[in-house]
Image (cartoon, rainbow, N blue to C red):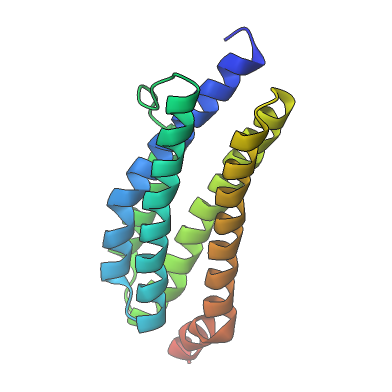
Length: 164
C-alpha cells in the first residue's frame, strides 16, 4: 500500500470480511443466550449486520473495487474467543453476562474500524460514502449501548447472585 486510497480500500475489505464473519457468528450467539431480551438483541443486530455488509458492497461497487479478498484476522480472533468462552460457561447467568462481554469486544472493534473508514473517506473527498459509513458507525455505537443496558440493567446482577 502506497496511498491513503489503497489503505482505505484495504479497510473497507477488512470491514466487509468482519461483517461477513459476524453474519455467521451472531445466530450462534443468539442461540446460546438464555435471556429473551439478549437473544432478541443478537437477532436484531444480525439484521443490522446484514445491512452493514450490503452497505459496504454498494460502497465498494461505487469505488469500483471488490469487497472480497481480505480476511479480517482480528474478527476471526474475536469469534474464536467467543466460542472458547461459550464452551467454558457453567451457568445460564454467566453465559449471558459473558456473551455480552464478547459481543462488546466485537462492537468496539467495529467502532474503531468504521471510525477510521469514515475519517479516510472524508479526507479522500468521498463525502457521501463517509456519511453512509457514519450511519453504520452510529448503529454500532447503538448496539454497544443496548448491550450495556442489558448488562447493567439486570444480567450482570443475575450473574453476581449466582455466586452467592
